[in-house]
Image 1: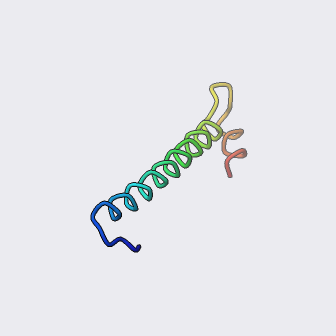
Image 2: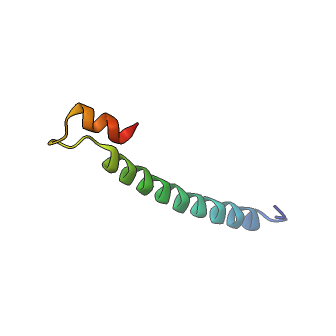
Image 3: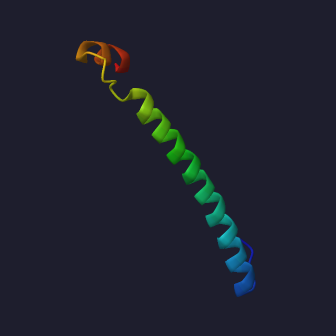
Length: 54
């Protein structure tokens, strides 16, 4: 981090935060999709569900 002015420091932090926000958004999307995939279906028995997730 080579910032010799407050503006440069702010720009660096802003860029870093924005990229982190994008990463968090993608991870959240992935986790929601994974949850939907492993969620027990109404027509599924407990044995079927357990067999699918273990």
